[in-house]
Length: 335
Image (cartoon, rainbow, N blue to C red; front, side, top):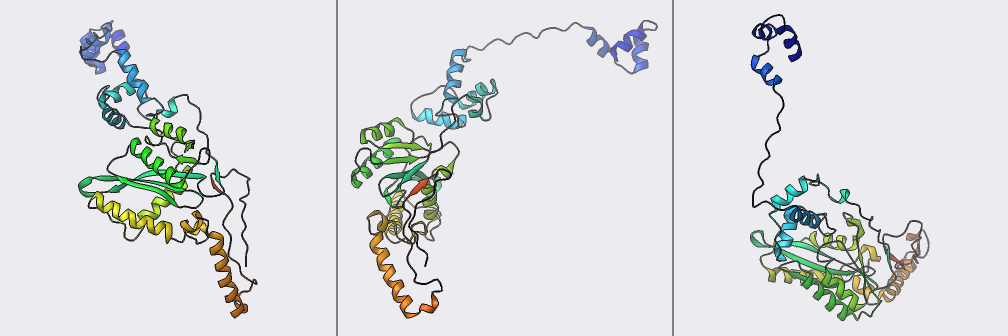
């Protein structure tokens, strides 16, 4: 349109040409001006250097923090005595490299291995995790549990005011000592929380001769036994909306884990309790139950259309992520 005005202005005045085409003269004059480069803004003295920005970006994109929002990273570093910059500045550094969204996908890193872990008896494979318990006035307590994957027995637990690798280290060490764990006997599996991947816990497991395993990022099904146990805990009828104090939470936990280990007839254990399986009583209990079934059959054989009933045995293998095509070995008799 500006070019049309300029052509028409060769025969009539610029005012007449603009008036005829409905173009303000100011727009014509502005379009005829040569473009000028905007003057650069001076860099404030308080601005971060390129080296400092690179350090911040490296921390945010590290394997430890690539799944965390800048606010979380800021909090973690703060508690560790490190201050790089404010979390808003962290966002600006990421925005300068189009990394505000999913940073893991923008990095070149090896894919995580799918854990495939097997237990054929107690104290071969443990799973541990941490969950929140609501306390008074917005306070949260932290429940640590260690579960034996084969027997579902809670071998160790603790409720504390904070989540820390030092507390996790103490719980694991005490539990291994209580269960008499020997070097190269046990694998300890966990998700990828900060306490689970801490150097203090890793060093402890090396000293104890315990192998460690971690879930893949964003894959809660890699830690199914701990997740299922937490669900059982939080769906108990007497589980409170919040605990009045740390003492209340620990008292409730004492009752719950006593029930869970000794009185909870677990569907995954053919309705045996974790204590029966963990302490090698399963065969004795199975024999007793078979005697009860035999007596019931003798009294009313017509009620058992498939013949003499028997109690199913426990599976010989329990897996976290059983390999495809691997049959689950079990002695399960059908009556």
